[in-house]
Image 1 (cartoon, rainbow, N blue to C red):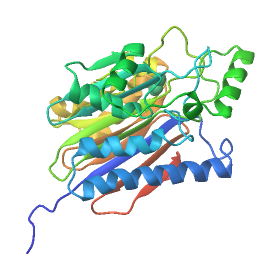
Image 2: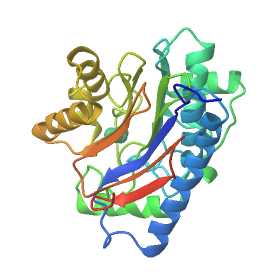
Image 3: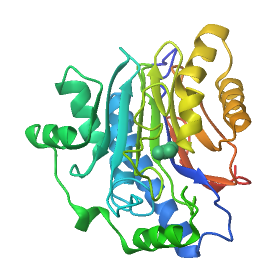
Length: 311
Ligand code: GLY
């Protein structure tokens, strides 16, 4: 039997963009990040290969990256000025544009799963701080504390930042994580999770948990997850802007993603995006020296890359 339109699925992930060059990462950090990306592709890819939904695949992939201290989300998240974790995450389903997000949370082991609970089990889209932590407990979302989230390297980064008096992420080699997917039925979804920026204060929230900025999914267009200097991604409405260009101008994903990243750069920001369309197309675009990234699809081998000059 032949299938006129063979089932096609795609998963793309990122682990952050920034000043990531071969000279910046140790061989151990390079290998560790690649191993984490591989595990995340395996987790999300297994969902899609089994006929599962894009929304479940992006949650599965991001959970793996959240548990991996090589990246700036959940375990291994960067610290606030006060030395705490304040985690942000979002998830969105392109089928009906349902979405859930959390900002400034500190008690759910996997903030992306808490965001999923907001989407599925509350009438709201975005919950913040102590209220969101209470909701997590009420929903039975797995809990974790500082002993799980905080690693010594992040304490050292915070101390270095305070000494340098550069209050905006002294070390951009660890980043936000995210995933976008298209499932066998042509539905797309996106998820993003982050600790934000080192030394953040005053309840600062970046683009990741903001639907239409760092996270967006719409079956009529595409799914987007972003990483980078969040303030600029918010001002450019990156996720929605890419989706709008695809939906209303009919632009190919790469054209739309590159144009919007150029808009971020014009504002003074930097970073990257991963994008999937409902025909299983997948692209990434970034303005930095590197972006932790990976892709797997129904018809190909998994690809992992970090530096700009890799595939
Ligand atoms: N892009 C992540 C943040 O700015 O918080």
